[in-house]
Image (cartoon, rainbow, N blue to C red; front, side, top):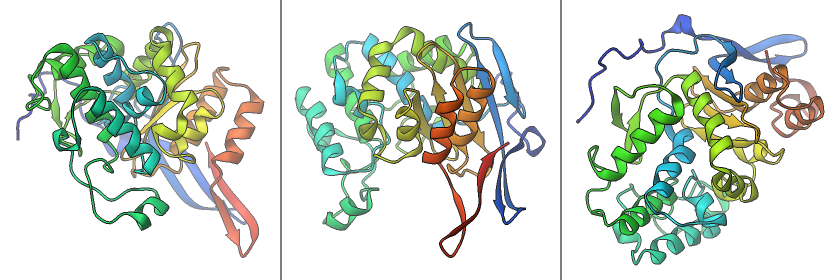
Length: 320
């Protein structure tokens, strides 16, 4: 497998780099703990708060999709509204999702056959029940791949090699990630969808999200106004966006969030679970004054993970 060498990149995260970030209570006792790393930066890009180590290397996974869209738009991609939102999505393969992906492809004169992501069943339970077979359109990253391909057509780049590390599209994406994160990218591997995957730090991704909010309002507006297209109606990032935040989750417990005025946050949960990531991000943003107490209360209710005794609530997951 092709990879870039580390070349002085900070050490990868170790167990001691993670701090307790959330606990699940049941009848007054803690039943489960989540550990993680997290960082919050201000609109000036400076670190304002962190849990665990903010400068250890990790894989941001799909949380970088809005930043990949920055590079695509610079190269000539002209999508708006829900079509722009699907290009940064980890969608769940509903008919509405796959129709958007097909529209992006058709606008570039392409079809599903041009996608190089794997095939998959829809993630949405109803859509999966109705599906007859796995397809590339249903793969959760197909919107991003459609955006990649549409960008290549707009820029006059080869569409057959668009996932190769040194393809002009991927070089442009790497440069945008370095610019927005303020960090060099010295190690790259391959993500689950087949695209290049670059290591970052939680502070770097928080900083990149802050700059996204300050510089790329059209991407942010498309995400918030079409949150259902970014994931599904009740995914954690969609629930964060219901309160006006700009959010994108990534596999293995990654959540990247920013406010419209540039307070950026990133959370990486050590065990890969998503049930704590949005709660932790919201509480950190509240602690630095970036969101109100009323917003935090509403988000805690929307994101609640309950400990039930029959139908009685005995406790819930809480961010530390």
